[in-house]
Length: 187
Image 1 (cartoon, one colour):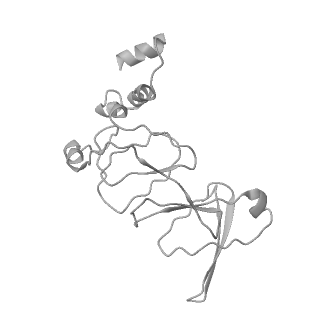
Image 2: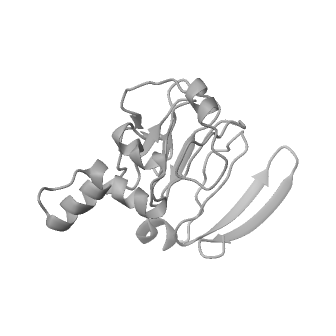
Image 3: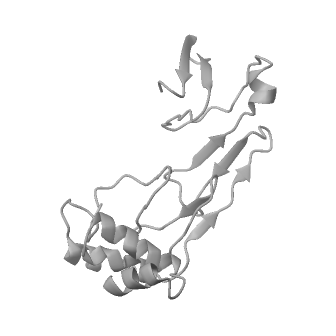
């Protein structure tokens, strides 16, 4: 840490992304063993709209920015550093897969019928997937049109990141009619 700080101050050489991240992590968790993890793990910088998939028992850390993390139902969140919470290094070491491959970046699958829907689906995983519904305000929201989207047969969570949405839901099986208004600011 001292060497990295000295190099940064003297600008002797350009620090790597991993070196800069180690210094950043050290500022949050001084001298925690976890600050060395950027040297042992893949450092992936996702751009807006990108997604990646990690299998079960793959170590990961989320550093900054906004993200949605989807995972199968489990109770096995195990920590070994960079947290004030309980650390269980032995359990973590026993459960890891030690896969050294780069994580799978997921390419969105554009819905053929509804071109404003992109699906991020991890290969071989049926527990979850993520649909991104992106309506361009210049077209959809200014025309005050109704937009029909396919019915999702599973439990779902809807996030509104910008603007507002009026949902009109009709359950044809039970003749049930419901309506909701959701705004990005009030949620």
